[in-house]
Amino acid sequence: MTKIWVNSGDSHVMEPDDLWTEALPPRLADRAPRSERGEKYEVLYIDGERIDRQLNDFMDAMRPPGSRDLDVRLKDLDQEGVWGQLAFPSMGFWLVSITERELARETVKAWNNWAHTDILSKNKRVITPACVSTANIEDAVAEVERVAELGFQSVFLPCSTRPGEEYALDRWEPLWTAAERAGLVLGFHIGTGGENVVFRGPGGAIVNYMETTYPGMRVISHMVAGGALDRHPDLKILIAEGGAGWVPAIGDRMDEAYRQHGMFVRPKLSRLPSEIIRQQVYASFQHDKSSVEIVESTGYRNVMWGDDYPHLEGTYGHTQSTLRELFDGVPDDIRERVTRGTFNELFRLPEQTPQE
Ligand SMILES: CC(C)(COP(=O)(O)O)[C@@H](O)C(=O)NCCC(=O)NCCSC(=O)[C@]1(C)CCC[C@@]2(C)[C@@H]3[C@@H]4C[C@@H]5C[C@]3(C[C@]5(C)O4)[C@H](O)C[C@@H]21
Ligand SMILES: [Mn+2]
Image (cartoon, rainbow, N blue to C red; front, side, top):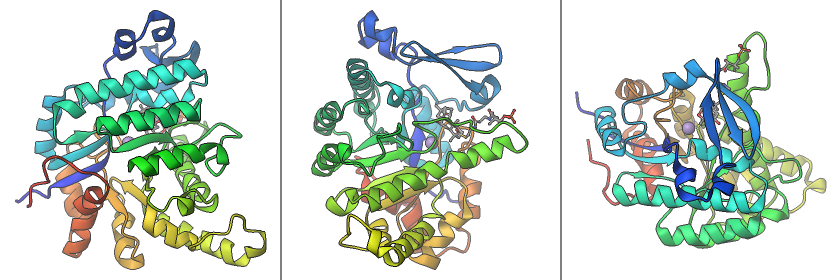
């Protein structure tokens, strides 16, 4: 049976444990994110703060052979039919929790230098976003300009922000300007920037899974209603791993707010929220049938498949069967759009995806 070749808009690199100890002086490296295996949980330390993270068995469960080895990863990808990946950070996700300016700036720079040297410069199929400081916008702008020169095509940002730092606020404007000017896609990955376990009780595993999806919606409402995307029409944002079926629906609801509460709306927008979403907002999913169905039923086309490799929520080991279930009976142009076209609209891979 011929393979359906796809690009993945949501994958992950697993950083070496000594990334920051190798790159930074001890006075900074000792405060960089590090994880230790506790009795039951992986224990995370960030700038001296201890955070009990994931259940050990949860973390152990997600380990395809190539998680930490690029050459083996490419073999995994050939086996699964994935040509290219936009591979988000793993430990690098926690850099967004650092609020001290120098530590944030230096740990981010070290992460980007590692990704450039060990991933981007060593292969033609896996690219990573760059990290930026969320502690100081000036530093974030400087890093955007630096990584654009190095060939990065996107920037990772957390879906949740600290109170008073919401994305609709003006504080972020220099970063939007720099990212648009550099042509970098803003990649907001779900489950970052806030607590991922907010409910302990019946249904906790599913409730918390949903609780990490909602901040992805909030990113869109802030970036659209706050005017950032209207002011920067060439800026594109990707909500990674949150599914895509709900995107047109929130566009409708924001249009309704824009019209029915027009007397309260500020800033006024040059386009309806749903138009801005259709032109500048992208979303990735792994298994959701609804993410494919809404392309044909609503005409929202910025839907991108993702393998979430090497995470448990991803498709490693069952990618081709997932793709056949998703695209059986789906018109070719929609399958092509979701499996490769949307990715290729946002990112340039040195070597193009093989045709089926
Ligand atoms: C949720 C509980 C504690 C409920 O327990 P109880 O029934 O009350 O005893 C239990 O079921 C559990 O620990 N489950 C493990 C999975 C989990 O932590 N779920 C949280 C919500 S889902 C999530 O946070 C995603 C978005 C999706 C799963 C992978 C995820 C945790 C990843 C994983 C772990 C870590 C966090 C990270 C990036 C990272 C490097 O990879 C994202 O920031 C976030 C992400
Ligand atoms: Mn992911």
